[in-house]
Length: 93
Image 1 (cartoon, one colour):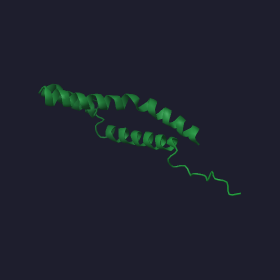
Image 2: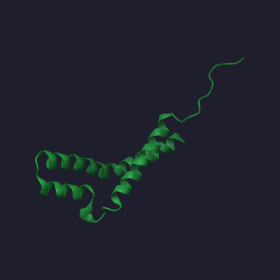
Image 3: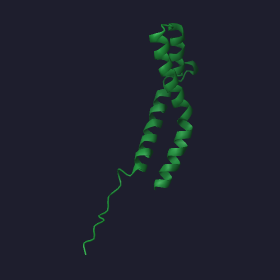
């Protein structure tokens, strides 16, 4: 079962690598450009890129990012062994 979760986790990570990187990079850049350097025009462009409003995906993109992250969290936590039943290793004989 752990191998299947590793496979799913690896596949999800490959698929979500670019969208999550884009989200993080544009979110950080927006804060730096708009708030620190007061370049509001460039900040608006970064915000549109952050939500993929440029491609008219602003309604579905955050949902897909969130579902992908939840999938990565579930598969990642399942691989840690935190939810496995522990067996009693002491001998009772």
